[in-house]
Amino acid sequence: MEKIKINGKIYEIRSIQTISTHVLQIAFVNMVPAKWGGDIVLYTAGGIECTTLTGWETVYRDEGQTIYLSDDGSVYQKPDPDTGGEILPSEPYVPTLEELQAAKKREISQACETAIYSGVDVKLSDGSTEHFSLTEHDQLNLFGKQVQLASGTTELEYHADGQPCRYYSAKDMQIITSMAMAFVSYHTTYCNAVNMWIAGCETADEIQQIYYGADVPEQYQSDVLKAYIATEKERAGDVDEPQVTE
Image (cartoon, rainbow, N blue to C red; front, side, top):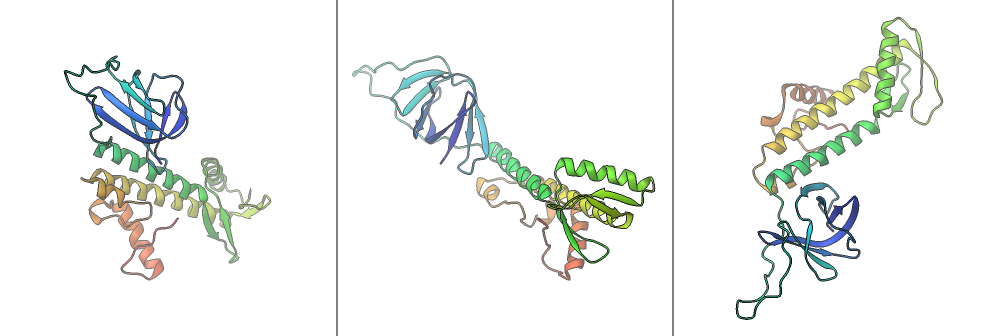
């Protein structure tokens, strides 16, 4: 179900559509705003911000759960029987290609951030594997560890997810920081390529087929992404399908 945000509050709606050049119809599910004015932020059924409508600040007509707004200050006047009936809804509001592309890019960006923050498994020098989250705070901490390594520190304090802080050897900390930075770099590169793919779409159907983890068409693959894919193929022993790490 679609949602809109008005004056900072979210409302569920059944539909939103323009019924004339200067009149917008919104059918609400339950609550209806008590105050009007300001921008109307429209969200897709999946909760992704789609577009922002501006200028619709005048209540043109109030039918309870269905509200009509105008962007030119006009209000509803009961039609003269001699001049015809009321304005009837035409077509539902359909986001433009640019709006759909912007919404898909936000979706991909959020998925990329989630993938990075979830972290990476690292196999240490003793053969054990530990998991490390990679939030922005974690990445800053690991950058600090790189500085310590460069200064010649031989034991560095850190902790894996859900584990107490302990000392890691310089060798293991180098493995952790290298794996973590490569993981972040890969996802950042992949996200950038997907955004290029989205920008190249010419229809809504093309955009809807894109998701985080999909194979990026070769024409949108940067040289850096191609290198990552080639490396992953070699590691997996797979010459056909690239593996997307999440």
